[in-house]
Amino acid sequence: MPIVLSDFQAALENFHRSYGEFLSACKRLKPEDRERSGVCGIWSPKQVVAHLAGWLREEPTTFRQLIRNPNYHKHYDEDEFNAQSVAERAAWDWDQTLADFIDSYRSYEEAITEIVVANPPDWRPFTAMLKVMGDDFLLHKDQLMQWLPADRR
Image 1 (cartoon, rainbow, N blue to C red):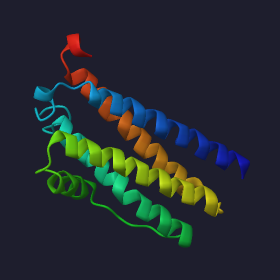
Image 2: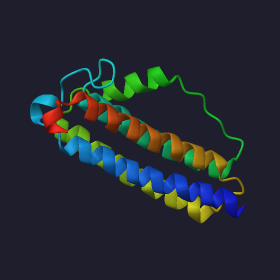
Image 3: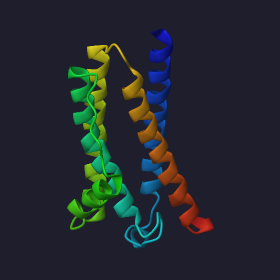
């Protein structure tokens, strides 16, 4: 099992590093850019943050279900879930949306601690979820950087 734990550790490190890189990119945005569309399809930076916060809020529930039942699986219509996450935060301003993103990251960290304490027999589903989330942070950070004018990157 140590190889799987090593994979989990690598995914965890990538998750935290990628979160930090995405958050740093968000903090560099000027107010006039935060709700301007086009960073990810038609989404604005604020909508991208809302989308990521939605997943950060959702996945701890899945972690806890997997701890209790290693065979647990929930199917998502990702487009529908993403649209719902963005819609739920649509009336919020940038600061509220970013604060929710930061708070949801802290909740996610608490769920990661629960995984480690539970020491599940199979770390792979947790590893995969962390990897996807970390990769999503990097994808959206790169989109933000490419979207911004060159003099503000």
